[in-house]
Amino acid sequence: MATIRDIAKKMGLSVSTVSRALNDNQRISIDTRKRVKKMAQELGYQPNYNARNLTNQEANAVGVVFPVNNRVVDNIFYVGLLRGINEELISKNYVLSVAIGNSTEQVLENVKSMITRAQIKRFILLYSHINDPVIELLRKQPVTFVTIGKPAAGQKWLYVDNNNVRAGADGTHFLMKRFHVSNPIFAESPNGWPYELDRREGYLREMAQKNRKPVIFAVPDEDEHQLDQLIKENPQMDGVVATDDYTGLKIYHRFKVLHPDKEIEVVGYNKSLPNELTDQHFHSVDLHPKEMGQAAVQLLFENCTETRLKHTIVEHSI
Image (tube, rainbow, N blue to C red; front, side, top):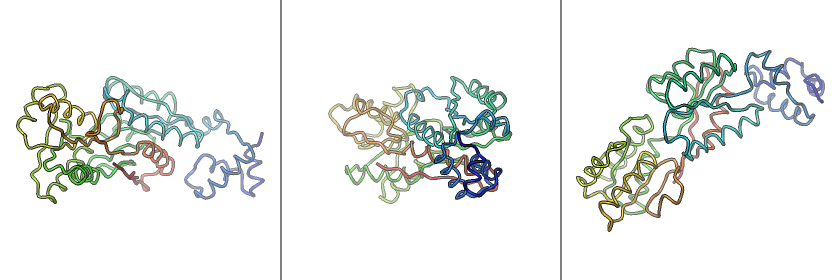
């Protein structure tokens, strides 16, 4: 079996340079890292993870943290994120370790254990929430982390996101141009997540350009009576721009109960619903979660110091 010394001799490099390149040390150029890894693959080199972990005091694993949300387990969007993350980690000889729980306290304890017991020093959070205790913990630890979703205003760390302002405008434009919707309403959750605010801003911009009156629904989680009342108070609505697919489907179903003989066009986000739950009047903006997951891993390994903080924007499509 080939060793680091074999690679170094073959390439005319020092053993320390080869070792650093194989471990993605930022002091080694990206080009050199790629060449070393290619040679390692050609020679059949297999890293000794136990030895590397003892040397670096870092596990060859990345912690993937889920949000506390009852829709997470069966949401296709998160499956796409994991596929992208896993594919990219395999290419780097890393594995993923998942932190998930029914409460913030459970997830927080899980992440603490990952840091102290498992020696995991790289994390990807599948969300970005304001005043989140997990994010606050990671900011205080000697670890690197990336969030899926941009930080709140004034906060800085690595993140991957879509251009949600443009996505909100594009979804609105799609309904108005393709289906001749005249009075689309915007439906959001009561939570005020950053991506919802951005999509709402895009909707408002598009409505202003078309000189149309905007209407915004804060859709309650359980109160169907309140949702029915909102629909009844807006008889002009002939379309819905929903901040996510589940919210859009909820309004669509209630609208059809109240108006079984009327059609309404709905556009949601995430492409997270099975086709069996929707029909030709329900549309979704694809945020390309697999590509987002891949970009998160690339960002996590290419930026290890605060002086190089940046973000990646993944394109969406309808």
